[in-house]
Length: 81
Image (cartoon, rainbow, N blue to C red; front, side):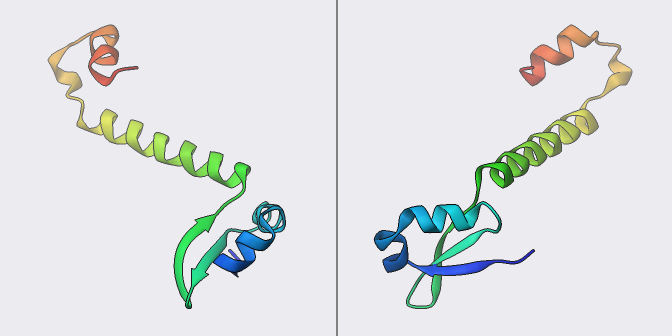
């Protein structure tokens, strides 16, 4: 994945340009050559959130002891789904 960089000054001066550029690649916002934040486009952010949610769900399933014989509704309630 390609990542580009912008300074905080660039972000302040032209936020629309940085946001537009972040639609293709994440943008690292830097201050004195140290990354302070990242700007990511909506599609990439949505994908990252979906992957984190999937990982949480997989972990919950892996930790569930199905040998207890609990029905789905009970397990779903415990997981908050």
